[in-house]
Image (tube, rainbow, N blue to C red; front, side, top):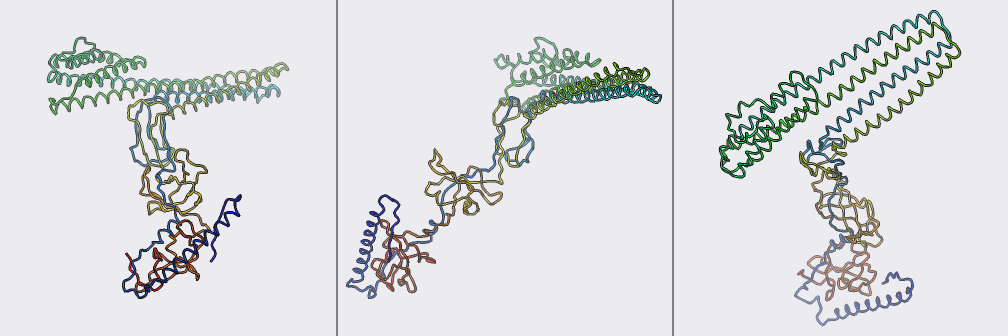
Amino acid sequence: MEFYKNIKNKEKKELFIYLGIVIVFLAVGYAVYAQTNDSGDETNPKDRTTPNQVELLNLKEKKDNSTYIKASGEVESKQKVDLKSEVSAKVRNIYVDLGQQVSRGQTLVVFENGDQSSRAQQARANLKSAQARKKQLESALKSQQAKLEKLKSGPRPEKLQQARTKLNNSKDDLNSAKESLKEVRQKAESDMQSKLVSSLRSASNAVDEAKDTILAATEIQYEYFYKNTQKALDITSAKEKAIRSLFDQDDAGRWIKKYISPLSGGLNKEIDKALSKPEKKETLLLLDKTITGLENTKKMLQEIPVNSEFSTSHEQKLSSAKQKIQKQLEALSSKKEAINVQASVNSSSIQQAKSEVTRAENGVASAKDNLQLVKSGAQKEDIQSQQEAVEQAQANLEQQQANIESARANLLSAHSSLSKTIIKSPIDGTVSAIEVDRGELVSPSQLVARVINTNGYQLKVYLSSQSARKIDVGNTTTIAQKYNGKVTNISPSLDPQKNKVEVNVSLANKNPDLIAGDFVDVKIKKSQLNDSSILLPIEAVSLTNNGSFVYTIGENNKVQTKEVKVDNIIGNKIKVSSGLEGVDKIIASTKGLDPQDKVKVR
């Protein structure tokens, strides 16, 4: 039999080879000697009436450990997006729930963005105006070029007729543009009046709602807070402030319902007056005053504490009153925004109509000049002057193109600012976190929501450097004993904190029953190696002059031999390189046993 040892130290190679050979022969001699002494025992094992008791070694587990690396890994999504705020603003609406499936581009959260929306609309209007101005300048350039050509060609009868017709057409265009401007202004005025009247009526309704709320609060005040306590004084003070801001009445904090019910002055009087001839500035001012009154009414309601003495009816009244006031506040804020948006739209429409009038006026002037040129004919200096006019018109057009590019950049900037107030999902996935509430003021870089792709899980596994050397990218894995996967990445360096190698394992299964953050078991198949040997205890192998054998249990519980090939002895272990194929269990110790001995498993 051959025994060998692999020695890596090149500097002492020969010395260690000799020492290895000596150690191997000594170990083999000792094993043979022990086997010989055992077989020469005075009592022949075959003559024993009592079977030897033996233990078995499970080779399946040893083979499995030689094929797979077992570890534990953390489940994580391959794709996880933290959506953070880029602005400081209040949360207006949240459109999704925790755990909800969302699509790429779906809106999750919207911040208050009235100012950004108005700026975007204004920038859009400015771009349209600049583009309209460009058309005017293009028309002017063509007109100047036409004049130049006519000057060069000289007057003809048909040219005179064409010039006169063009002048008449230009005048018709001017009249049409002026009429269109008039209609646009009338429509803008009508639309604005509609918005103002609607807003003022909403403000009037809000004042009435606030009065009903104060009446309900007064009933609760005199039912539960009539004593001279600090809380009663706080409620009285808040009520007085609300009535003063709504109805212009002082010292009304202790008024009873019969004095409050007939109140109709203050804001109601101002609103009724404004309705007779609504103006934008006055309407916005009245909306602000009404919102202030509602805010004071809301503070009055907040001063009233619900306690165990409250009846169900009064508790419901107080809750309903708070909801109604909040609803009115939101409605009036929307009315203010609608007025500002309408003003922006009106300005854009009127500006565009004015541009058309200006273009038509330029057309009339150009047609007049053209007719005059046709009539008078052209001199050399006239042609030169007209050439300069053409060049100037070309320069004006180029400058306007630059203005358009600037306006377009402003629009993109405004859209960018607006888009920062609308949080959208950049991927298909599941909402795993919502970190804000409606009405909350968020700051830049604050986490708003998180979306993960639950169809793309992977495991993050940490292995020792020795284990990591035994696998390669692409090796198959078994995860949580039921999911298949593959090694997708092996870090080239140790993790500085864990002092281990990070390995990523992807799951082949879609929608696995796993949760991000869980730790699950994983078996990673080792790469194919030339060395498929198994280490066994030295006493489990019988070393004889005729070969090396392991013992198994055959029929009638008798010892059977299985010849194996051994390589070398490592400590109290012996390395078996082949011969164990198809063998799952062997006898743990061959000492004191011979083939065909009868045995019993402990």
